Image 1 (cartoon, rainbow, N blue to C red):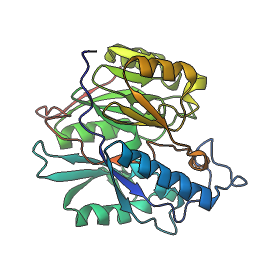
Image 2 (spheres, one colour; image 1 turned 45 degrees about the vertical axis):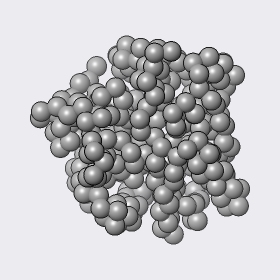
Image 3 (cartoon, one colour; image 1 turned 90 degrees about the vertical axis):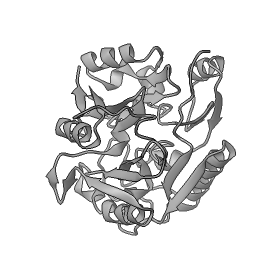
Image 4 (cartoon, rainbow, N blue to C red; image 1 turned 30 degrees about the horizontal axis):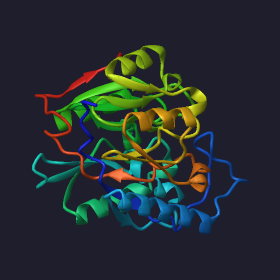
Length: 297
């Protein structure tokens, strides 16, 4: 195939769903009358952990705060990075768009501190640019970031300058694909799932041009949450996989593992939202750039 596997995506932080429920509505999938079943949600979460471990990955578990029902969506706690040799660790803590989720940050900050991460903040106490890590991917040496519904353009400038990396931004406009990881999923260094309907026209065209071999998702396919998947080498752990998408992934040499996470869809998140990769490395997965750089369509 001539493609190189992603070198990150084998080591994840997850939040145990002890207090998962829908207490408010901050995305189109959340409805107070449609509450997740706690036992079913736990079984789905454990099945996801098992799928990760079966694919050779590892899950680190952070307890959920009682007053933070969305904390199970661990991807949005922060952007974790290692030095190229893996010896040093840092994390850019998310500054959530909605105040209801900001209660999660102190508990996540404590976990990262205990595990010897240097913590960075883009915004604190309602001040500064909003940034949610579900909008950010390390891919092809750059930080690919969605902006609009949850992450502000100013945050991209902070990320580029503070981390010394190249940041490429894409404007999201679809209300149901409010994070980058609902309309985009890198698979290896040449393949990625892309849903053009998630983005402004200029951003959609720029993103398709960035991907050497895109798997272009229709809006209906993307709304199955199939792009909200994680990749461990040649294994893709997915919440759903439409037949056409599966056929292309298998043709490209991937093994598709579908794990039911329907209870978590009630909160607007799936496989990628429930997992936060800890093994992205500066220098290996993200090239360093003097002073940083931001590119927008």
